[in-house]
Amino acid sequence: MSTDLTDADKVAIASLTQKVIASWAYADAEAFASVFTDDGTMVLPGLYKKGREEIQKYMTVAFADVYKGTQVTGKPIDMRPLGRDAAILLSAGGVLDPGESEVADKAAIRAAWIVVKQDGQWKLAAYQNSPRDAVEGVKTQRAA
Image (cartoon, rainbow, N blue to C red):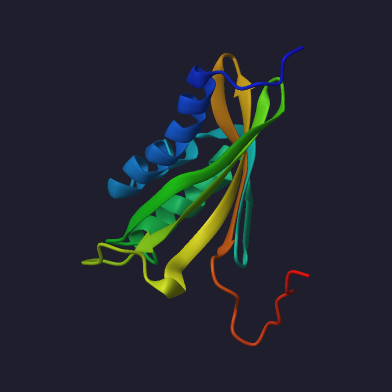
């Protein structure tokens, strides 16, 4: 059993970030949620949503409220297999407020995308992001 990702797998996995960016550009909660497995999870600071339906409901409200007029950007920074039909994609990006062309430091994030291959398609089983920079007042570990 090979655990290497083919070039086609790598392209398909990386394209999930582009699907999220495109769905966000159109404030399309259904398209956003469609990248997840039926039981996929989305973890953001202060937020946990489980299941495509719950994610879609949350994003419908968020696109009309907190994310109204925003764009999102992101690019893969690492990818590796976790087995024959699973992989992890790490990305860097963030939310762009209206009129911004670069992510502000306060909005920059790093994210982990756990992806699985189902019926020949790569889907997002779990997504989690956190601020790129240390939160003020929180000590970080130093490399030894």
